[in-house]
Image 1 (cartoon, each protein chain N blue to C red):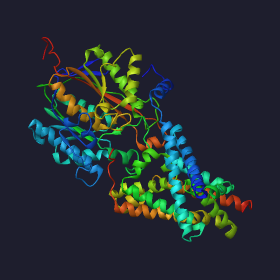
Image 2 (image 1 turned 90 degrees about the vertical axis):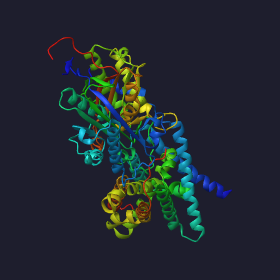
Image 3 (image 1 turned 30 degrees about the horizontal axis):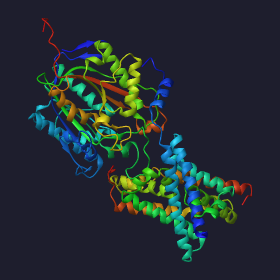
Image 4 (image 1 turned 60 degrees about the horizontal axis):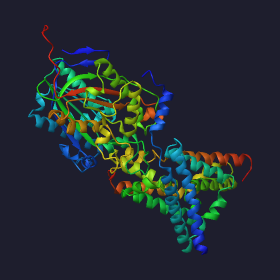
Length: 346
Length: 123
Length: 148
């Protein structure tokens, strides 16, 4: 059973495994640096559907189906499903996953949803409450733009700090300890708000939340950047990453050599005109599910921290002049499980 | 030569009016919608003060095509209507003056929206 | 987070955030905006040369640009020009037309009445509201002070 260490971190002593993952992407993602690692790509942004929202639902549906196929499982083998997206009332998830018939929890963590859903899945398995749990999230450039910003054909200029919402979906299945990657510890984030109001600079809004969660994890586990091969953030982008490194340095942790950001992995900043990098739930999900999880499985990455960050505002709150509260959730993923406790009364 | 100079004036004035807008976009937190509102209201004010029409007379399209030109049209139409109809002209004049542009935007916007499909940004 | 105050963080953000490329944006806005206005002027000349009185030729030229703007929006070309044009495409009447056509096109999936019809004005609406309001205010002022 899990152990609370420090104030915020939970060590999952049973070391649940991520037994499978699948990543779906669109055209821009397929043309990016990890394009060939996606399970499914579709150059048609509509994914054959009648609206962008239905396209995103279709992506989630395909992600769920693909990860089940890869693990040789049927929907009936999954006890719980955690899913979320950026759209109002989580319609992408609801409409995309309704046919699966799996007991369902909808989540809104904005771009932190991949970590949030994975944490909850791992907690259920760790606690012996379920044998197999699925976590899915997605984002779609077009559906996000029309909800949060402007219609697609609108002629506006994007600022240098703005990020590109990824058209991507990722799905994982978490099960009892059997194979790498193992989920060894999780730190659930708190909502942080440093009074950033610029909707075009999400990286800056989210960096403090990432700093706090990472700092708490290090303090609770008495570890530091040197203990990990990779500290991967979800979508801080160029600006957010710079700020995170500065903020953590002030706390006495230098993560510069170990840090990478999914928003800067998914796209080539120089050639794909994404300004400060990729963003959206699908960004972190796609990078994790296509590239990172296989790398841990193959032992190329031994120990890493995955921190997905989310900006928790709405178009209404922004118009009302409110600042952008953010959150960051952390998982310690490893190619080796937690050491079994010596003796004891299990 | 006369013709070239006429076009040059239009280019110059139009360009400067737009460049000012770009300064607003780059250096202030003003959103595009707010900038457009500022331009049209400025046009009404300058038009009302009689300061904008001379610019239109001098630069033609360079002054009439930017949104300030539309504000000027609103002011001009209002002034004429008030002179003709008294206080009621305050209500009828502005829209009447700019009716063609607004109706065109609505009508062509509608037509194009019906005929085409929105496409993903191919970037 | 206890250590960094909001104000100190705002300073850090400012330093870390690349500014807009004004050295590129402002000249481009000047050039593209100037070109669009010159095109409008060419239409004015075209119409007056065909015998249209000047007071009709001016709005007719604007209407022509509105049509072209709406067309290019539908053809998925306008936003590519606007990316470089910035204020150069926004400030002329073309910006207004694009701001009406783009949402009408985008929200068609929500139907012709509540989607296309209602959402047509979500960006350009304020321009109409404040333009008309300013005009009415002006009209009341000149009537009261007999300035017409």
